[in-house]
Length: 241
Image 1 (cartoon, rainbow, N blue to C red):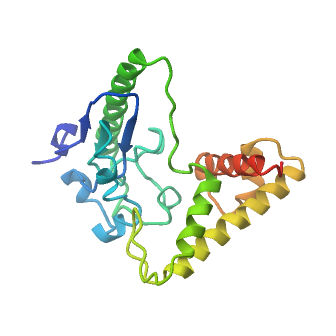
Image 2 (cartoon, helix red, strand yellow):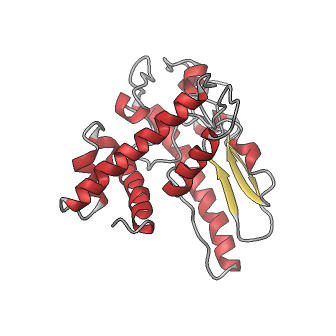
Image 3 (cartoon, rainbow, N blue to C red):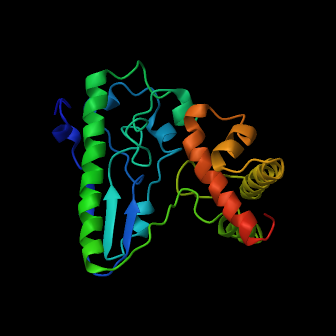
């Protein structure tokens, strides 16, 4: 296997089609790399697991229609558009130095061909469901419902005797209560800054990001706007804006 075309990628994804209107996806379950990509990777397998989501595929196996991706997000990220699906800078990859050297254009092109193939496949699946049901809802899981997220953290923190956290991705955490407090404090601080920006006259997620997310690269503003939207929904539900 030389890794000279997308066909050398091995497993791409698993699609199971069943009845009902619900589709579950685990787009970051995978850990696999094409040989040509693996040869250029500077980060180790353990470092990749920091942002991959192993075992999320197991969580959706009972959903009749589900899709489990087997490719590592460090080969191409299915949670991003084609312009940022292959990480080129540290800002795009959480500060990680992914590559030994910049990936050549032909390698990037082959990765993006797989990225495009996934969304072509997904389009066929969703169209088949749309043809059978009058309407359906797309849930955006990376941010989800901010209030539910914070409440789930509070519930976890209330559990006695926690000794380790095993998250959906990344290594085990040996200081669970400290880490939970860190997550809560970070989100509440962001929320206060977002609220202050709104009261100061910011009217769109883009304007809020530009004022609040000064510690984030502009290349990540699109993802930051999704997080801001989740916070705004929470603040609205609570009657604070």
